[in-house]
Structure formats: C-alpha cells, structure tokens
Figure (cartoon, rainbow, N blue to C red):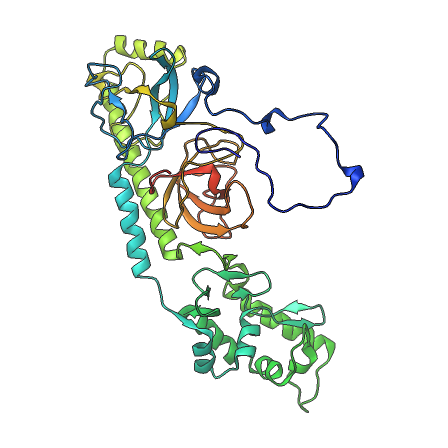
Length: 453
C-alpha cells in the first residue's frame, strides 16, 4: 500500500488462514517490481522526470501558490500573486532547483477556482431543498389500502408463469439491495423502504389498472412465481387458458414499458447519492460554464488574428519545439503557454521551489489519493489516465458507494459526472448524458471540495 509519505509497504492480514502445502512457495520465482517495498524519498529525477505531468497540491490555504510571469518574485520560492486557484491543477515538471531538492513546474491547466466551486455548491443546495418528500412503506400501504406484504412484492418483483415473467414495478430490489433514484430509498435509521410521491402515483395507477393481480397476490400465500391463469377475467369466473394468461402478462408488461418503468436508474441502497434534480442542475451548470469559456476563447482568438505576422511565426516555432497546446476547457484569461505575451493576454504560470509533498505523480502504483473524504456533490480531478478518463479531468461526484470494509486502498467507489464527454464513459443507467458518466475508485481522484489529509 502507498503511505501518505510516499513509501510503498506491504500490509499483512490480521487473521491467519490455512492453505494447502502444494499451493505455497518459499520464494517468488518471478517477483513483480511493482510489489516491492520502497523508501519514501527517491531522487526527484526518478520519481518526477522532466516533462512528466503532476497534480499540484499547493494553494487553497496550504503550501505555496503558483507565481505569475507578470509579477515574478525576487527570490526563488518567494510567494507571488496568482489569479487562479491552483489546488488540483495539472502541471509539467520543468526542472529541479536548490541542488535537486525541489521542483520547478509549469502550469498546464488550472482546476476549479473558488467562484466555480461556490456555484456548484449553491446549485446542489438549491436542488436538495427542492427534493421531493419520501414516505415510509407503512404510510404508503395505509394510503393505498394494501398490506405491506403485497406492496413490497408489487414494488419489487412479481413473477408469473408461464415464462417466469416479472410484472412488478421494479422500484426497488431487496435481493440485490438496490433502489431507484427519485422513486425509492432505504432508510437506515428505520430499517425500512421509503417511497416518493411519483412512486405512490404509479402504485395507485397499477392498483387501478390490474386489480385482479393485487387480489390474487393478497389471497395467495407467498410464492416465487404465481400462475397467470388465475388473473385472467373469464365469463364463468374460473381459470383462463394458457393463451389468455400469456396475453394478460404481455398487457401488464406493455403498461410498465409505456411508463418507462423498465429502464429506471438503479443503484445500491447502501449508497449516498445526489438527487436527480441535483444531477440535472450540475449538468446545466457545467454546460453553461463550458459554453461561456468557448465564447471567451473565440473572442480572444479573433483579437489574436489581428496580431502581426512576426508574432504568429514566433508562436508557431514554439509549438513546433514541443510547447504545450492550449487546453480546451481552461477558465477565461488562463490560456497558458510557455513564454506568454502580455499583448495577447496570455500568462505563464510557474511554480518555483516546490517540495515533493505538494505534487502528485501520474498513475502511481499502488493507487492512492491525498483525499480521504468524499460526499455527493463534491468536485474532483482525475489522478490517473488508465481508468477511462484523462489525467486532470474534472468531474462531480453523484454517488458514493460502500464497497467493503476490507477493500484496499479505499473502501469507496464513486460515480462521477464528467465535465466533458469521454469515449470510455456511459450514462450510469440513464442518470447522466451519454459519455459523461463513469464509475471509479476513490483512490483515483483528488477531492477539490475538501482539503487533503
């Protein structure tokens, strides 16, 4: 496991386990170098090679802030003024100073500033205030004049033969321990399910549309599957034929599909989640911020076209030498390049004499995160590029899942709403737009809304 100091140490179990002798070796014939213990203090040139990308952990009231080329400090390591919030920013190792004891970095793309973080907090607070009320299963059963046993089976799964077809509403799953966002949730204090107003409305419509189903389930003993012949309306009141039973099941399935109940977004009932209206608010906010940045960049590009040819040729030569390209989603006024030009409104953000404790190398093994607290609605930045999203990609936590008490390096799994689409992302069961939802471990991201440990 990776320690906060940077050392990689082996962790052994507390309880001895028995293994067959033929499955045990005295020594590993092919040791994996990634699993070897190592000291925390390796030379900077080995841990952070020149040109490698890192995450800067300074700023936000701790450590050093980046220095602006428009106001360089008089001495190396002196604090300079910086326009942008730099905690969680992506930077590139430029070199080493103070006899190789500290790093010199160039900023590639800044993270969320304080203003953006406050906008996200306000949007989520407003969404939580507008979240609809939930009612306990006891209250819902009383209001619908149903027994709790019948209500729980209708809201969960209700299987009928022939075909073992599920004609339940799938609003929750006790067997899989899943809830449907915006419809049901599990109350840990009361140890019971709760239903929203929209769920109660659908349950009432189901009761009115298929009264014989509810009556049959109420009169029969609990079973994994009921006979559909018993719910068919016949002239003489007896059981229907097999064909009539199949038609009755298809009629119920069509009714469920017409209301979109067969594709509701489900997630573990043990999870802490952002309500659907909160997710929609974050989507609108991120889209608005990106559109605003595009318009400002377009205006900046129009002004740059009026520069003289000599300045344009100079920029092209620098790009040909391997300079960093302008990032797509940089905040306004932060189009960063080495050798910035004040006439074009460009700045070079530099970090002087940065200690190793304020940088995070890309894709460490084992994976670890400087953050240890994660809540729905927090803003995060990606610490890896091998988990389906780019290194330094920004996103918002929409769900926090408890994986296991024994899982390493972190017992938390996160569902993220990315600011920009990526090919490896999906919709997270319809909760987010296409290409912007992804599930990762808490060890893969840095929480921008919380101070690091």
